Length: 241
Picture 1 (tube, rainbow, N blue to C red):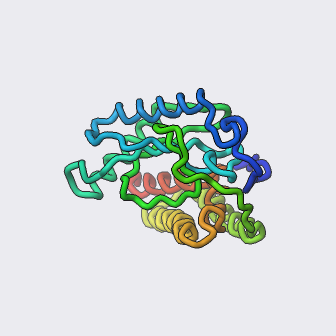
Picture 2: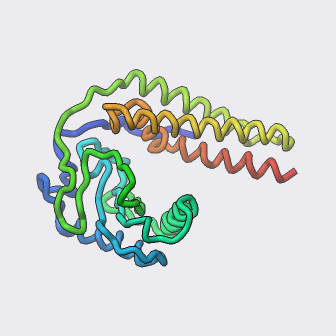
């Protein structure tokens, strides 16, 4: 796979001027995002009332770049849904997946990601804007972080190399035993990338930690998507003998 990713931007002096006038979200942008979030939730069969619809992530902060998505979080109370927690979460996640399969909305070069969030869920973000109430919940503060670019680049190259090796292997003929070994290796690599991100998000650097920024580089360059595809390929090979 050819990597066409441009130089990665970690931090900016102002919120994205395409969408913000200083700290005020442009009305036409807010109206679109609010409508998308509302329509998404109306398309589910969930009964809890919406507590809030929140814009979070890098486009509500200084750490945006050309790959950033609009992260729209619909806040509800999971306790109002009958069932076991893991079953509820699986069902809610299926709504998000289905919506993403049916829609490809891009606003001035940025994709839309919609997520249903439990009001009691811990969410790590230093910028959260209520689309419903048109006001900041957590107003971001400009505080340029120290970025360990050398460590990020080394980890990125290491993971990229592993993914490329697995991708090469996935194109070969192999029996079910070997396919299972590669499937486990691919799954473990994905788990490791997610694990490093999860742990580093809990540190004081949070969004600007090595684990999180490595994950974003892998995702934005397309390599993480390749890893997901490889996992599916090896899974199919296990049972296609």
